[in-house]
Length: 209
Image (tube, rainbow, N blue to C red; front, side):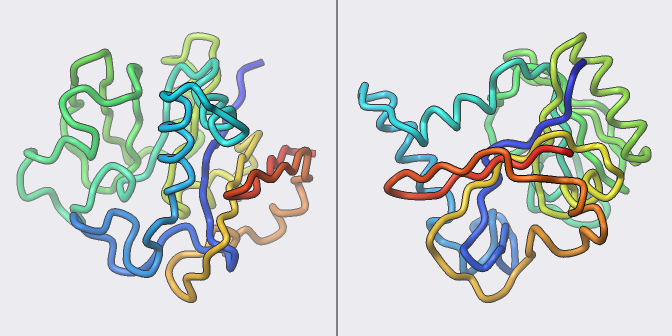
């Protein structure tokens, strides 16, 4: 049965997934510089033929994925009503998804087809409805849940997220948005299935009980 999975969700040691003041020149906000350096280093090592644990986990996040759901804050830095439709995401003309991506937002715009097979769909439908559409688009494969943390929290509270791969990096932020806030009793529905450390970070995989 297809699953909803979240991968490579990186948090600080004190639990923050983003800093403060997300904007064009600071996609993850202030106070979290280097939060995702582990991933960039892993990809460089893979390209150089020296891949290790971290690269293995990055690649797992792409396995058997047929569609993606993300929040608007992951799609870009624009807030509120769209002034125009010139913003097409952080990823250039050929985003790395190569499938349908459902962007959850209160401010709708027409679907956006990009090179390489990625099409962004902007939707204000309930979480369950968006997931159903994503499963249909995935055609039997799993669906990946991207950020931001608020989007992950919504799907956790709704009992829809099957697997969450966390990456804990040894840095402190002190402020921002914490991934584990607002989970409520939903946290009782998860258990730690795996914990592995590299020289850079600790990987933790949570699954539904």
